[in-house]
Length: 409
Ligand SMILES: Nc1nc2c(c(=O)[nH]1)N[C@H]1C(S)=C(S)[C@@H](COP(=O)(O)O)O[C@H]1N2
Ligand SMILES: [Mo]
Image (cartoon, rainbow, N blue to C red; front, side, top):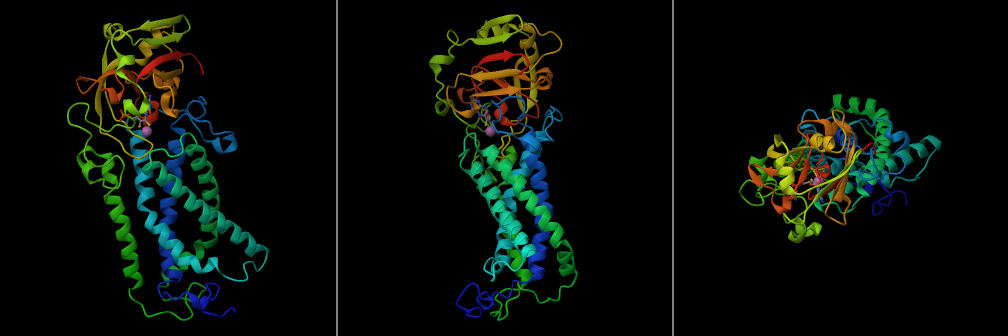
C-alpha cells in the first residue's frame, strides 16, 4: 500500500521533477526575509492604534505579554504610518505566490506515513501545522480585510494579532531548524536526495529556474497592480486594490474615501449650520460650538496624508481648521493637553469614535479640520468637521465629529 502510486501517501504519487531541496530552499530564504519584515511592520502597525489607550481603539482582551512592546505612537515623521502600512500590505500581497509555491513544494510531506515516527518528529509536525496553518491564516485574514473592506469589524485586529504571534513563533522555530540545510542546499545546486525529490519524476516541462521566474513573475504582477494605491499619480494602476482605480471625483475633495456619509448614516439634516454643534468637555466644563464659532478661532493649516490600515494612502492634503490643543485650552487645559475621546454623529460602526493620546493632541499639526485643499470638507470627507493627526492610521481621523471629551482616559 505504501508504494501504491495512486495514493498521495506514496512517494511515487508526487511526480513533479521541480520538487527538491533547492527549489524549496530558495523560496524559504525569500520568505525568511519577507515574513520577518511583515511581522515587524505588523506589530508596529498595531502599536499605531494606541491599542492600550482605550477600549474604543482596540478591544483585544489580554494583550498581556504579547503587548509588552507597545509604545506611545509618535507624530513624526508625518508619513510614518503611510510608509509602514504601505510596506506591510504591499509586501504581504506580493509574497502570496511565493507562499503558495513554497507550500506546493513541500506538500508531499503532508501525506507522509507513518504520520509520526518519534517524539521529536511529532513536535516537528505540530510546529509545521502551526506554521502552515498560521501562515495561511495570516495571509487570508489580511487579504480579506483589505479586499472586503473590514469583513471582521472589530475582530480583525485580535485575530490577525494573535495569529501573527503563533505563526511567527512557529516560523522562528522552523527557520532555526532548517537554516543550515537551506544554506547547504543553496550552495550545492546539484540535487541531494531527500524526501522531496520524486522517486519516479515525470518529464520536466519547465526548468527549476523557469518555475522560479514564474513565481517571481506572479509576485511582480501583484506588486505592480497593488503598489499604486499609495501614490496619487499611480492610483489608476492599482487594479487589484479596492481603493485603486480612478480618483473618486476631481477637485479639492477628490481623493480616496473610506466610508461615505450615506454608508455611515450621517445625513445633511444633522450637519446644517443651524443644527450641528460641537460639544467639547474638559476640566472646566462643557462648551458648545457651531461652525461659525469655530471659524472665529485661530485657523491653521497642515499638509497631511490619509493612510488606511488597508494599505492605501493619499499624498499630503492641505487641511485647515482649529488645533486640537486650542480646543483643549477652551476647556481648561492650557499648555499641557491630555488625551481625548472623539465621537462622531455616526451611531453605529466601530470607527464612529476614537481615542487620541496627549502627544497627538499637543502636536501643532493636529487639527479639527473644516477645509481641505482650499474648499469646505465634502460630506464624504467628514463635513462639518473631522480630525486629522500626523503619522496616525486613518481610523483615528474621525469624520463628522460631534463630541470631544478631554481628560486622561
Ligand atoms: N465617523 C467615522 N470616521 C471615520 C471612519 C468611519 O467609518 N466613520 N473611517 C475611518 C477610516 S478607516 C479612514 S481610513 C479614514 C478615511 O478618511 P477619508 O474617507 O476622508 O479618506 O476615515 C476614518 N474616519
Ligand atoms: Mo481605514
